[in-house]
Length: 136
Image 1 (tube, one colour):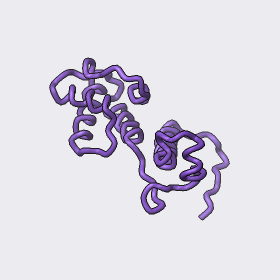
Image 2: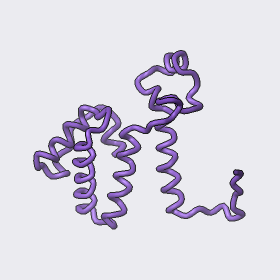
Image 3: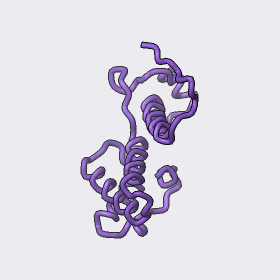
């Protein structure tokens, strides 16, 4: 099925946000098998990242996509209230970890365990040289 472009190229903010989240998920699913590999090694082992390769030619997104969706959900639910945003995001992280997701990074684990121990979101963060805190 061919999708026709609208004669009006203006997109709504909602469409842009949905596109951003979908683009994150697609890129994450394409790139996940290459994580931790150099460009040269990834190309040698897997070829170009032009199709899904994770499970039976199906893609799988990582915690990066899940966290992006949790942040977007917390933004929607908080309606601009920073304290509510913190509480909602912290609750989502606690329940996300309780579901035993695959591939949890050590610093993410430490921060969420601090939330489970009762520390407020403003004090649960940990120093990390990775990109997780910046992404969230």
